[in-house]
Length: 140
Image 1 (cartoon, rainbow, N blue to C red):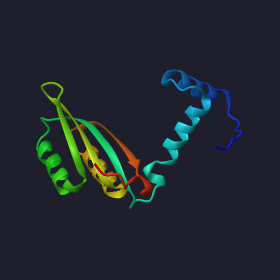
Image 2: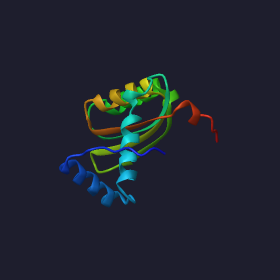
Image 3: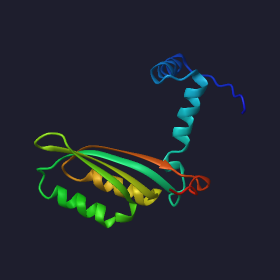
């Protein structure tokens, strides 16, 4: 492990110290390493053809005309990416779905953007985690 010295302004250091406290890190170094990993492993920085795993979660209004049909079609068109989906009825009008996806970063990203852009999808977020080639060898 290498030791690196950096300069941070007081406001940024206060945010890091708050994160150390709220996330239960043992110290600043662990928090900064975690933040760097998250930033450096973002899909935009990775090769779009690399494999990734992802979660796509979104809340939608199931009363929006033909939305369920459009979402179903999108997932069927990309059936090879979907590992599992959880569907939850939140109330009379809203549902939440969480899908676990695996495939190339470019295909997973395209699907997540397509779903979140649909009229009637109220809130959505995708967590895309690149899998470097040395991590893809384990099978269950």
